[in-house]
Length: 291
Ligand SMILES: Cc1cc2nc3c(=O)[nH]c(=O)nc-3n(C[C@H](O)[C@H](O)[C@H](O)COP(=O)(O)O)c2cc1C
Image 1: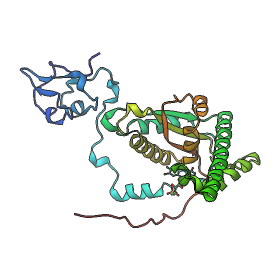
Image 2: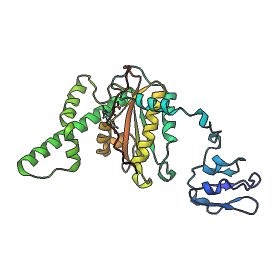
Image 3: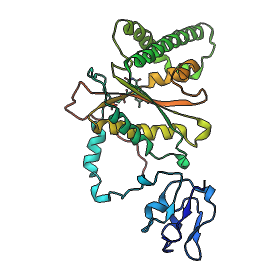
């Protein structure tokens, strides 16, 4: 199926779409705008979004999603937006309450509409929201982390005695080894310092060879998703520990139907927060070079 065509009955040759096309595949035609190379379309939708008469047709996309834009007057003000960003905090105390499926679907939508390099849209999502699967994922994560903690400590011990170098990721992760060992013991006692008893885990995965910028794509989608979490009166916390664990184990990926060649750049927990922060916090001053 062709990716883009112009409905010549509708097109008025106003030319608005031509300079907007990032791939430069639109030009003036005799009666209407002309697509020079339909296969070169990135499906960004700019041509359709600008067209006063809705002449561009993108048959592989869902036409019903091309709805009227809200207009800048409906945007949040900078003050409101900044205080919303600052109000998002990592939640580590959750209520014992499941999250509604519709809310989880809205969170996925927030990821879906994030920008991706070259509009490649390579992200996939895993949502774990059943108690039995959450327990399975927790068990697997803490087992893998405890095992890696032992390996890191042993490698560092050997390094101290013989000077043998250790893998770079061990240098970065060595601060966690004590915590990962404790986490496993605590989990056996019903204390969850991994997901903090959150009822849902969301993970993003992507085939790095099918994306121009897999880590950035996941980060951008992840941030939109966690902000959506806030607006749904839910709370969230990114979970780097799960990310470490799942990326080091093909077996773990298989358990979650994540293809082995995919990477998991990001995950976060979701649940109803059992804490209500009264104050926004400070951050380090921004290091900015102005020219
Ligand atoms: C990529 C990433 C991974 C993180 N992984 C964890 C984690 O595994 N466990 C945890 O408790 N917090 C984790 N966090 C939360 C950070 O500790 C937290 O964002 C930071 O302390 C700032 O606090 P705030 O999110 O409340 O602003 C992670 C955050 C990011 C951005």
